[in-house]
Structures are given as structure tokens and as C-alpha cells.
Figure: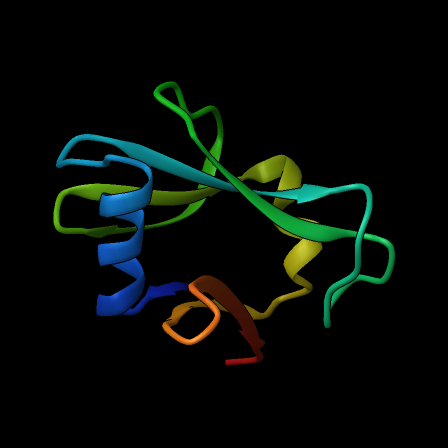
Length: 98
């Protein structure tokens, strides 16, 4: 499994969350909502300075994006693609089997 962050998405993270090199963003499962990979669960993210049990990660412009072991099940062996949609001014998440 891999995490892919588009150039537009990294700019969104830097602008909206005031991120800089050395910061860390955790992707995690939320118990409400829905997603293409898990019904009844959605994807959340938060700034997290102290990762524990990182199993998947990628670094873009010095910012670490990661998933911890306890949330790996959510992705059901799909890669995570994060894109920014300019017209809705929101991040979009896509899940693809490698």
C-alpha cells in the first residue's frame, strides 16, 4: 500500500493547515460516514507530532503523511490518492488497488 499526494493537495495542506517541513499528518478511520472501501467509515486526517506504529508513509516537501497499524484495515489493500478539487475547494480521496 502507498500514499500519493498531488502537488495541488500538498499546497492545500501547507496553506490550510499551516504545515512546513518536519510536520506530520496522520490519516485515520472515522466511525461515521462512508467511503468506497468501508461502509459506515470515512477517512480523517490530523496533524500528529508523535506517530506510533507507522506502517505506511510518504514524505512530500519534508512533510510526513502516514497511516498507523491500527488504521491499516480501513484501506483494504488499496493505495490512497489525495487530490485537491479547486472548484469545491476540498480535498478528494481516491482508493485504488495496486
